[in-house]
Each structure stands twice: as C-alpha cells, then as structure tokens.
Length: 186
Image (cartoon, rainbow, N blue to C red; front, side, top):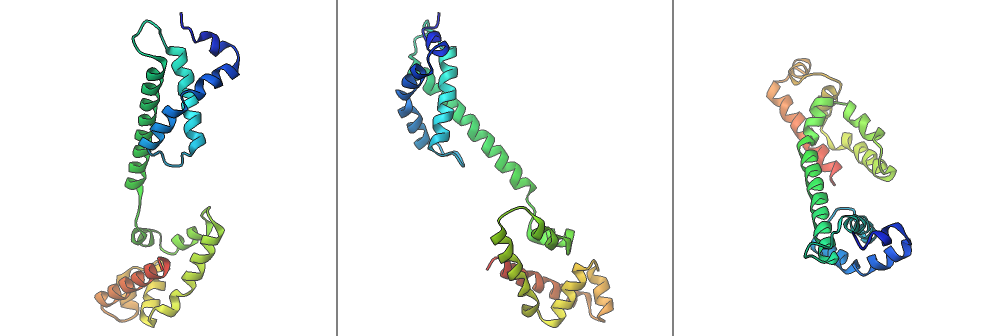
C-alpha cells in the first residue's frame, strides 16, 4: 500500500508541507529549462500537480525515493511542455507570411486589417500615423503606381494606363514597397 495515500486523502496542509520540501527541485529545473511565459508561480503550480500525481503513483517496492521519483516525473513533464512549445513555434513559422506577400495577395484590404486587428491601441495608432507619411515619401509616379495597384490593378494594366513600360512600373512599385517597409519599421 502507498504510504502517501493518507496525505492525499486527508489534510491539504499536510500535502502543502510535504510539497514545500521539494520546492528546491522545482527551482533547480526552472534554472535548467526555459518555458516561455512561465513565471515562478507557474513553475510551482506545475510542480504541485506533478508532485500530487507522483504521490498517487509511487510504490514503495521500487528502489527509488519519492524525491527522485518526483524529480524524474517533473523533468519529463517539463520536457513535454518544451516539445509542445517548439511544435507550436514551428507551426507559426511555417504559417508566417511576409509583408510583401500580404500586400501582393490582399492589396488595400491588408491595411484595413491592420486597423481592425485586435491588439494594442497605441501600436495601431502609431502604425496609422506612420502610414500617413507614405504619400509624402513617394514620388508622384510611385504614388500613382502604388495606389492603382492597391485598388486592384495589375502592373501590366497600370503600365498601359500611364503609357509606361512595365519594367518602369515594376520598379516604381518595388521602390514604393521598400519605402513602405522603411516607414513601418522605422
């Protein structure tokens, strides 16, 4: 029979007193591993959960102490959390789209999305102010090319409408994108 069953069934204060003896294990692993957005309390809470599970599963017949059993279980749990974080990071990286692709795919709708997107209101205000500078930074031909493109026209069509070569329109569009990036990331 598990000697810790009484602690698990009974007084939560007895569990807390026992768990406090194993806080150093939690702190040691906190120094060893980094979990994004985990503060000290999160580590202690995860440790508490795994300590409870360790007490439930502990068998005296094995030649391991409860401390080593908990440490092993807790470290495995932390490694699992790290794997999940890394998998999420890889998923986000594979789904990321560059600013150029967003502008080319969504056109003017991309800028509408920036204003609607949930987030920090101050950041949105700063971006809007930065975008207001764009027309003054662009040459008249770049501004015309960029506005027409944002309104849904293809570069070939803009070249015909402005009686320009397509390579000239492409260059103006590329310069406008470059200036847009410079303004946004300034």
